[in-house]
Image 1 (spheres, rainbow over the protein chains, first blue to last red):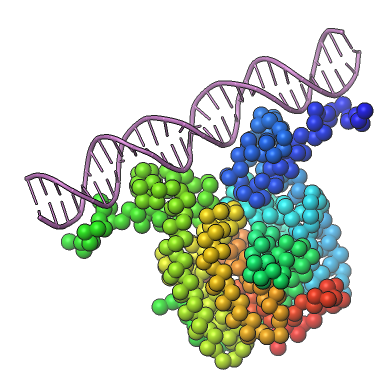
Image 2: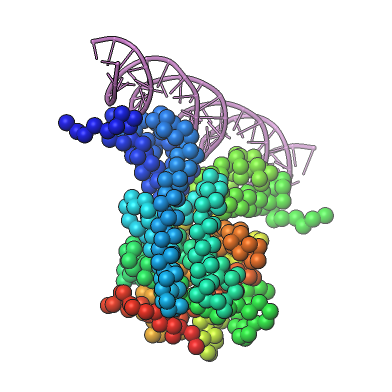
Length: 236
Length: 236
DNA sequence: TGATCTTTTGTACGATAGTACAAATCACAT
DNA sequence: ATGTGATTTGTACTATCGTACAAAAGATCA
């Protein structure tokens, strides 16, 4: 006989609610929100369509619960890693540590709730591209604090760079991170098989290396372009 | 009186086919493929749903035509800009010119067919995030050649960096570029209004500056992945 | 066991999706 | 002006969507 769960938590299958959440997360992350039907999710989870309604009321509610489930642990983990990174003495090393603290959790595999995980990160990438309203709201509420914390930390290790530039560059970092998770095969294809875009460790190292250099780039001189412009112009 | 079109090309409205294409491009780029219905497109174009079927047969066919219409002129323009950039003598300046040639056309406004335009670039970003099959096929066919040309050119101006690293970094560039077009408001928000994420010129300069530095970062040492401390020799 | 609550199932409903197609309308050559 | 081919309209068909809801099934405890 199997172990009995507590009186308040029992179901016919081990945990149908979890199965539905996992299936939905996977399907949303790979196909987007609108391309996936409630029936698709139910089938992938081995459940009945009505069961989804029972647990999450609406399709939006299901997406909302996916976010709720991840955001807390993920931001906590990121804060811990950021705090540790900020304790690094050398400014140079500290910057790399901060960037790594930002990047690494996004690539953790499987159902790692604390790290956020590649699947959930990819989900966020897709939702942001689709302009999903549910996602947009919860993102602005939940992630901006953490983003500001990272931006501030990076700014402290690069005091001579204007905050505006730091914001832009961390924006680029997130875009690069998202894109790496969305189309990893493109890297493999363009490198003619020499690089594996699906290897997280590889992606992390490449991303950290490139991003640290980007942050360290000279400040953009808003007033006057210091270096002479290249001959190429985009307009006629 | 207005100019008469040739006998084979006439319609009640100036050019309904074009209006439908433009409306579809706009709607797809902002909401994704699946969230937009043929009726939405028809309404936005001031046309009848049946008219969409008449001109493009299916919804997929409409998307395909949007791509077909842009790809040719866009790749041509990019090739020209790349050729011009490659003529820059100084390696440092050449790298920046190449990156600019890659970035600038993606931000051109309005219905600029040759440049590709921000709208079409954003469309590609969203389609890639959604994993759209029609887009995936045509992208691999049409864009990889140009991508390789740019990668090769960058590689030539940075001979000491392995090609693999160049591929990764140009992948990050595209991700950053896409993301900047998808959620420009995030930059404004995070910079507390100090930066305008929607200003193309601003985005281009920031992206070029950051990306050039990223390309110039030291090569990733494959043998010893965990380097103790980062080296800052990327810039002079 | 039987009462009670939770969960799952099965099904149905209205809305909307993509698409097909005949009729209406237009531009233009004759 | 009229016939002809291209285009637009209006509408209808079928499939599938999200969701609701009653009944069935399981779990829990007196």
